[in-house]
Image 1: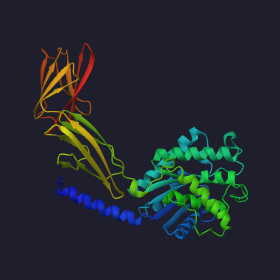
Image 2 (image 1 turned 90 degrees about the vertical axis):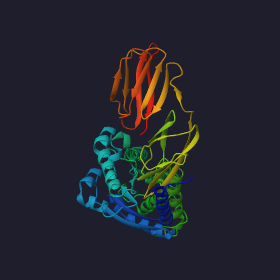
Image 3 (image 1 turned 90 degrees about the horizontal axis):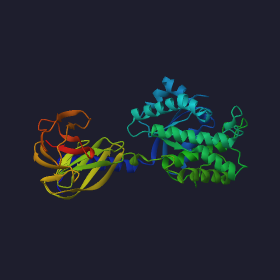
Length: 419
């Protein structure tokens, strides 16, 4: 199949971008936005050293203030400066240790909006940047101020559910640190993850968090890492295994993606006669290349394409971005030219080209309207007989809806206008 010059240029660009992403996928930059749960024992540094020991590379920075909530971070110009310092691969967002576990109404009004706004700032700064929420853990004996979080298990579960919900609202991912903590508490209770206050992490707690972030960012096992942060190697092995189980068994639950997976090609094809209207539903793309299967191509967002001959055609969409590319193909079938049956009962349509149509009804409709793709009325008819001529030669290209009523009820038919 012959492809246009613009298509070939886009493929070359895509090839270069994909080659770069493949080469650089094990080297990431991570900004940690959080509070004391992040700066105690210097989690970013532990994560960086763990990463290096596994043969990968992480450039890290952090912005941590004791007790800061999502709203505190959102209102802090230093936080915004850090986010905009470079197009980070990941920006880790952590709320105050209790706030996501509070009552739903409070979370919905005080926690969710600023948490999502922070993620939006991350995306606005870097097209391929990912916001990743730091799912923290329940306190050792929970929070006694409220029955629903007055044990570790109750508080930990509410934190888990809240962070998943926040991430879903922000189109972000989750590092399930709290899930890894639960695994250790259930299976290795002699390993103390807490500092004496029963809230902040011990060194083992921080190391477990770092392992969870490694597995979440790289989607690879942390097990076998030679760096143990000074912990007993056997204990470090248990913590590595817990992190890997928490993350890698539930990648879809945590919405974890590598950069090359961010761009997804998808579309809906609506066939009307010898015309197909393509509605693009791709995510995180910057450009598009369509192959209609008959030698024609397009770079439009939602092209409308007419076929000369009947047959089955593979429509290919390549979605392109600096993150990577993705391709999807759908088969469509074009029927023979000439007369197109409406619903097989009420209407026959003849297409004469240039937006001219002849509609033949079995029964004369009392009123008939033509609407554009936005639902606005383009023209209205009160037919005197069963034949109606519609002239859309001066209308914009697109699919138009014919609506009328008969004894059988309300009817609708789509007319394609190509220029």
